[in-house]
Image (cartoon, rainbow, N blue to C red; front, side):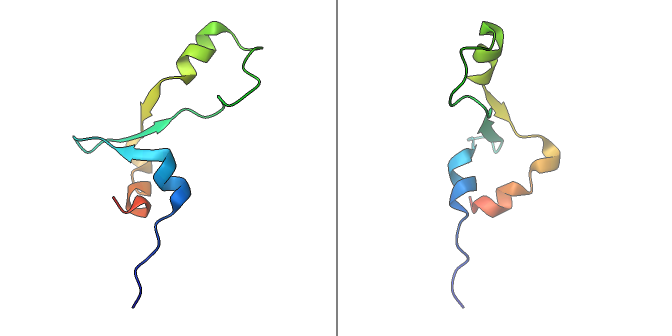
Length: 63
């Protein structure tokens, strides 16, 4: 039976820290950012810890 393939979209978006938390980038920061306030732009640069209800995605990552 062949191995299950890793979902590359999820593998590139989420990552696991040394302590086991799953982190992700905030979305919506690729373009059209000039119209937003500086506070919003700054907050989008921050990496976020995934909420505990979404941890099941970690199983898809294969990590």
